[in-house]
Image 1 (spheres, rainbow, N blue to C red):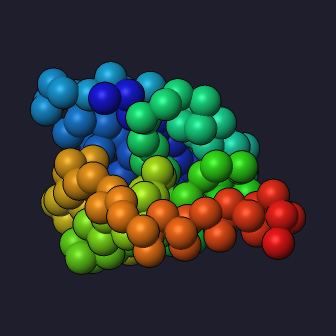
Image 2 (cartoon, rainbow, N blue to C red):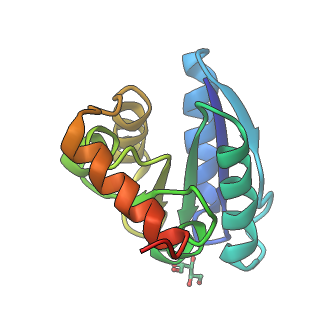
Length: 150
Ligand code: RB5
Protein backbone atom coordinates (compact mmCIF):
# COMPACT_ATOMS: atom_id res chain seq x y z
CA UNK A 1 0.00 0.00 0.00
CA UNK A 2 1.26 3.51 -0.87
CA UNK A 3 1.48 5.86 2.11
CA UNK A 4 2.09 9.61 1.82
CA UNK A 5 3.45 11.13 5.02
CA UNK A 6 4.20 14.69 6.07
CA UNK A 7 4.49 17.09 8.97
CA UNK A 8 5.31 20.63 9.97
CA UNK A 9 7.92 21.37 12.65
CA UNK A 10 5.38 20.64 15.43
CA UNK A 11 4.91 17.13 14.08
CA UNK A 12 8.37 16.55 12.67
CA UNK A 13 9.65 14.21 15.40
CA UNK A 14 6.45 12.18 15.45
CA UNK A 15 6.51 11.89 11.65
CA UNK A 16 10.07 10.58 11.75
CA UNK A 17 9.09 8.00 14.37
CA UNK A 18 6.02 6.88 12.37
CA UNK A 19 8.11 6.64 9.21
CA UNK A 20 10.55 4.29 10.96
CA UNK A 21 7.63 2.23 12.25
CA UNK A 22 6.10 1.94 8.77
CA UNK A 23 9.43 1.04 7.21
CA UNK A 24 9.97 -1.65 9.87
CA UNK A 25 6.56 -3.18 8.99
CA UNK A 26 7.79 -3.75 5.44
CA UNK A 27 4.26 -3.69 3.96
CA UNK A 28 4.20 -0.07 2.92
CA UNK A 29 5.66 2.09 0.18
CA UNK A 30 6.21 5.32 2.11
CA UNK A 31 6.77 8.69 0.44
CA UNK A 32 7.84 11.50 2.77
CA UNK A 33 6.65 14.97 1.71
CA UNK A 34 8.64 16.72 4.46
CA UNK A 35 9.39 18.66 6.46
CA UNK A 36 12.90 17.30 6.83
CA UNK A 37 14.16 19.27 9.85
CA UNK A 38 12.74 20.86 13.03
CA UNK A 39 12.94 24.32 11.44
CA UNK A 40 9.58 26.13 11.30
CA UNK A 41 7.47 25.68 8.16
CA UNK A 42 3.81 26.38 7.31
CA UNK A 43 1.61 23.31 7.73
CA UNK A 44 -0.74 24.12 4.77
CA UNK A 45 2.18 23.63 2.36
CA UNK A 46 2.73 20.07 3.58
CA UNK A 47 -1.00 19.32 3.87
CA UNK A 48 -1.45 20.28 0.21
CA UNK A 49 1.36 18.02 -1.01
CA UNK A 50 0.13 14.99 0.92
CA UNK A 51 -3.51 15.70 0.01
CA UNK A 52 -2.70 15.82 -3.70
CA UNK A 53 -0.58 12.65 -3.44
CA UNK A 54 -3.37 10.71 -1.75
CA UNK A 55 -6.14 11.86 -4.07
CA UNK A 56 -4.09 11.21 -7.20
CA UNK A 57 -3.10 7.65 -6.24
CA UNK A 58 -6.05 5.26 -6.03
CA UNK A 59 -6.06 3.24 -2.82
CA UNK A 60 -3.33 5.22 -1.10
CA UNK A 61 -3.62 6.70 2.39
CA UNK A 62 -1.89 9.59 4.15
CA UNK A 63 -0.48 10.47 7.55
CA UNK A 64 -0.03 14.12 8.57
CA UNK A 65 1.38 15.52 11.81
CA UNK A 66 1.52 19.02 13.23
CA UNK A 67 1.57 20.24 16.83
CA UNK A 68 -2.09 19.51 17.50
CA UNK A 69 -2.99 17.62 14.32
CA UNK A 70 -5.78 20.15 13.84
CA UNK A 71 -4.30 22.86 11.61
CA UNK A 72 -2.89 20.34 9.17
CA UNK A 73 -6.24 18.47 9.07
CA UNK A 74 -8.17 21.67 8.35
CA UNK A 75 -5.77 22.47 5.52
CA UNK A 76 -5.79 18.93 4.10
CA UNK A 77 -9.59 18.87 4.06
CA UNK A 78 -9.54 21.78 1.60
CA UNK A 79 -8.01 19.51 -1.04
CA UNK A 80 -10.77 18.01 -3.17
CA UNK A 81 -11.31 14.36 -2.34
CA UNK A 82 -9.52 14.45 1.00
CA UNK A 83 -11.28 13.20 4.11
CA UNK A 84 -8.74 13.91 6.84
CA UNK A 85 -9.43 12.91 10.44
CA UNK A 86 -7.56 14.24 13.45
CA UNK A 87 -7.52 11.43 16.02
CA UNK A 88 -5.92 10.74 19.37
CA UNK A 89 -7.86 7.63 20.36
CA UNK A 90 -8.07 4.13 18.94
CA UNK A 91 -11.85 4.04 18.43
CA UNK A 92 -11.87 7.21 16.31
CA UNK A 93 -8.90 6.07 14.20
CA UNK A 94 -10.73 2.81 13.47
CA UNK A 95 -14.23 4.16 12.85
CA UNK A 96 -13.13 7.06 10.70
CA UNK A 97 -12.00 4.40 8.21
CA UNK A 98 -15.10 2.24 8.66
CA UNK A 99 -17.72 4.98 8.52
CA UNK A 100 -16.11 8.05 6.91
CA UNK A 101 -13.70 6.27 4.57
CA UNK A 102 -11.11 8.78 5.80
CA UNK A 103 -8.04 8.81 3.60
CA UNK A 104 -5.67 10.85 5.81
CA UNK A 105 -4.96 10.38 9.51
CA UNK A 106 -3.80 13.54 11.31
CA UNK A 107 -1.91 13.35 14.59
CA UNK A 108 -0.65 15.91 17.09
CA UNK A 109 3.04 15.67 17.86
CA UNK A 110 2.47 17.78 20.99
CA UNK A 111 -0.58 15.72 21.99
CA UNK A 112 0.29 12.03 21.74
CA UNK A 113 3.45 9.97 22.10
CA UNK A 114 5.06 7.65 19.55
CA UNK A 115 3.64 4.45 21.05
CA UNK A 116 0.02 5.52 20.77
CA UNK A 117 0.71 7.09 17.37
CA UNK A 118 1.93 3.74 16.02
CA UNK A 119 -1.22 2.01 17.33
CA UNK A 120 -3.44 4.62 15.69
CA UNK A 121 -1.52 4.42 12.41
CA UNK A 122 -1.69 0.64 12.46
CA UNK A 123 -5.45 0.44 13.00
CA UNK A 124 -6.10 3.25 10.49
CA UNK A 125 -4.10 1.55 7.74
CA UNK A 126 -5.52 -1.90 8.42
CA UNK A 127 -9.21 -1.07 8.67
CA UNK A 128 -11.41 -0.91 5.59
CA UNK A 129 -14.44 1.19 4.72
CA UNK A 130 -17.57 -0.63 5.84
CA UNK A 131 -19.39 0.52 2.72
CA UNK A 132 -23.09 0.00 2.54
CA UNK A 133 -25.94 2.37 1.95
CA UNK A 134 -25.92 4.86 4.78
CA UNK A 135 -22.18 5.47 5.02
CA UNK A 136 -21.71 5.88 1.28
CA UNK A 137 -24.78 8.14 1.09
CA UNK A 138 -23.28 10.43 3.75
CA UNK A 139 -19.90 10.52 2.01
CA UNK A 140 -21.69 11.34 -1.24
CA UNK A 141 -23.29 14.29 0.57
CA UNK A 142 -19.86 15.48 1.74
CA UNK A 143 -18.68 15.27 -1.88
CA UNK A 144 -21.76 17.21 -3.00
CA UNK A 145 -20.89 20.00 -0.53
CA UNK A 146 -17.29 19.97 -1.80
CA UNK A 147 -18.58 20.39 -5.37
CA UNK A 148 -21.19 23.00 -4.37
CA UNK A 149 -23.66 20.55 -5.86
CA UNK A 150 -26.37 20.89 -3.22
C1 RB5 B 1 3.00 25.34 14.94
O1 RB5 B 1 3.53 26.04 16.01
C2 RB5 B 1 1.60 24.87 15.29
O2 RB5 B 1 0.72 25.94 15.27
C3 RB5 B 1 1.15 23.79 14.32
O3 RB5 B 1 2.06 22.72 14.38
C4 RB5 B 1 -0.21 23.18 14.56
O4 RB5 B 1 -0.35 22.77 15.88
C5 RB5 B 1 -1.36 23.93 14.07
O5 RB5 B 1 -2.52 23.50 14.17
